[in-house]
Image 1 (cartoon, helix red, strand yellow):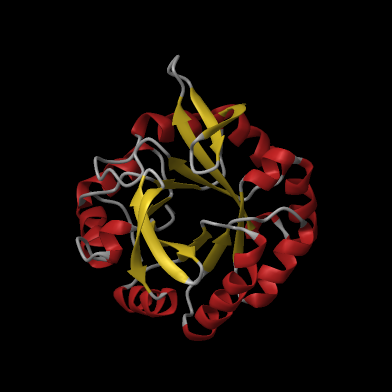
Image 2: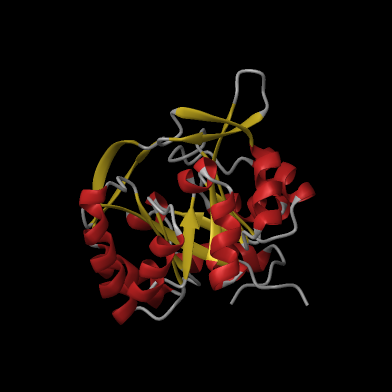
Length: 251
């Protein structure tokens, strides 16, 4: 049986508030994370993703507090990422109420931490967050620092390696498409889907219901968006209706 497509709002959290910009710049306030999370659960969101976009040590305790408050009031799975580097970081986030934990820069710096986390908690809690952009020669590369810095890794190869090390899911974020509302990077989704069997979450570029359908057609198991949900341009229900009409099962 084909698994239901998951629709996931993403909350980029900075100092306890949800923010959103274009290509990770010009951030503007989008509201209180707990209120937004509660509203999305009511709309029928399947999961929520929190990303601490500053991920500095100063913001860390705020993130744990926000995660804890959200987990107390919202009963759908919560993935939290940003600044995760060690098994201890994962342990604290899970204890705060996260169901899954996203890792990006920490895994690039020390790939073996993926296996350490998977061995300790199980692959199902570990999401590789891959921030991808097109390089000048057209290939896909992994980036850090909001897409501004190349990590020197070919994106598809990195996703394959991370899955082999124990990542249970890949959050595939197109930095070029982020916030543009021009649609997901379908070529990127297809390229990773051909080589990786773990679930893929498509992120970056959603602007219309048909964009979500196209991402699933390209191989995504879940679709993630931020600003179109935060600012009321689309509802979870509209996205699910479009997916259902295209023949994709939804919850």
